Length: 429
Image (cartoon, rainbow, N blue to C red; front, side):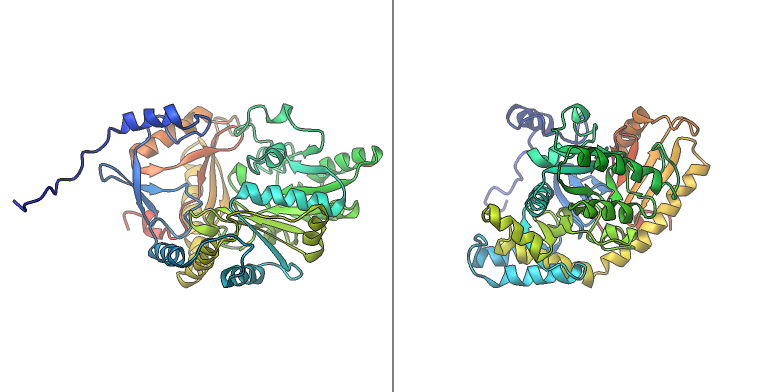
């Protein structure tokens, strides 16, 4: 009738598309769900499949502003139309973004490295620790995940991410007992001295062998276990002991930092400490690949003795403009306040389930970093791994994306876009 072909193209068969992915895209790069819906669009805290069904996104800790934010599209398009190159060239955005990040950092931190991901940020943090300390030996926390490079995989001991993690660590990696106050060997908020003893034992063994400690890396909030707070005083004691032997302290804020906790911008603030190196990524670019390391001048310059550092895309004009826009939107839309108020409300609702459902053992975390730990027995804390998987599948059927985490895959991880409002937790109100 219109005189031209205006019919929409036929939809590709979703199952065939998934088979094409499996045939070409290395299968070690997993996807959510056995039969995943095909997602081609998102808006705020929802993801939309090819049949038009909308799913509440409760696990995307990358799109902090929400999906499809117009400011992100504008900033990327505008800067791409002007210039995108590498950080060896002189342009304003890299200075402006570095200055903006330093305003968020503790006093005394005055140097920024820009990279593309959390893996790169943590890898660089390790290199900085090596260069500054003159040692190679790193202490890391059991059950943690820090990335996929050779070095960051070496310090990652989560068997959920790598079933061979505990038996394949190189001799420069020294895991210490995970300070899990819920299911660890020592329970409760006052258990820090018991967990610190594990650090003492490693440091004593290294001293006896006359090996120089390079550093200690830890998420300031136990992210891989659903956001469990570390026992009070843990990082204060560990940082003091590591620094006393010439090592540096790295705060991995990739998952838990950058305002997601609501009550704190950085996770280490809860422990009342200041690290020597901060690594960050994830939500910095709202889905655009962006990461950073913040440290002190003397640590940054120690790397120069080993050569210069360069990232082809880290700190590009597009990345810097997007990074600044994310911070501006988070402030303008009061997303940090939203994470605190809405997250706390949702945690209260979840905690009420412990009185109703024996399967719900505990609710961890704060703000928009929460974890619901499911157990079969409240005395033995037997993980409800199969039930967690079944619940995630049922939630998908109901239109909610949620996935398990933790070494036992029995914790529902809840990390929604920070624009999520109370109405999505109280749909009948």
